[in-house]
Image 1 (cartoon, helix red, strand yellow):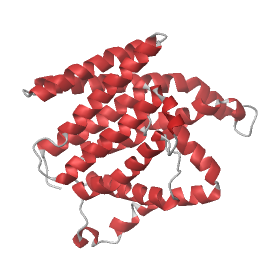
Image 2 (cartoon, rainbow, N blue to C red; image 1 turned 120 degrees about the vertical axis):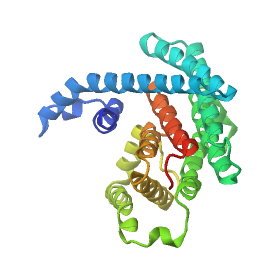
Image 3 (cartoon, helix red, strand yellow; image 1 turned 45 degrees about the vertical axis):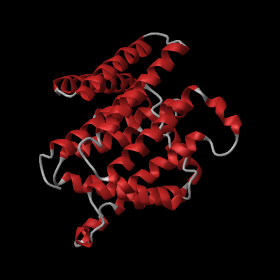
Image 4 (cartoon, rainbow, N blue to C red; image 1 turned 30 degrees about the vertical axis):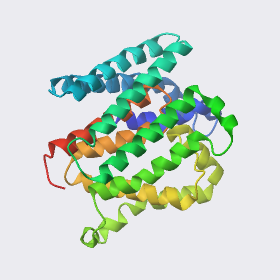
Length: 287
């Protein structure tokens, strides 16, 4: 719940400030946000930090060498992340933090394919790794833009949107019997329809909000984002019926956004991927 409050009421205003709310029709909202935002941010970060620390502990309990390496890398990221948050980080620390974070996400994404022979899982893993690599590369090497062509950050965004399809097919499939009830088509259409309405009402502001909050510039043709949102929403709704941990994992990845501009957002992405992997490999219930 605190994470949702951070997305809705704190993250957007950090980009533009809170001053435009002062003296308006709802001055009390300004006071509420100013007063509560430090608590929301701190609580969200601490909860994410503790949760990912537990992830590292669970990985240590796994007897495999890959899990141990992932755990060591994860704790290394936690140390670097805490240092960068509570100190004035230098360039070397930030670069080291991004490199270790990418290593952790890569190891987790590769773990997703462990014990599976399906090519779809490998495609999902590769798309995750590549899109996150581009996000981290964009942070500390923007000079590569001079090479011309599409900006790497845009390529990463395209890969993330494309990944919605193999992710959906892997967990849900495209069989006709999956859509035998009208409700299975209507419910995921609600967030997609809201997105369409908001976008058509003000495309520029919607793109700006999407960039600020989730890191998506909306540079692709609009229907691609609508389709990806519908697939992601339908996947979450279907997982509600069988695996709540999967739902949390998918939501954390979505809320973390694409660019992972802070330690907190990276923690959410790590936690989300881990929850999905845990459910895939433990296979507690049948889909």
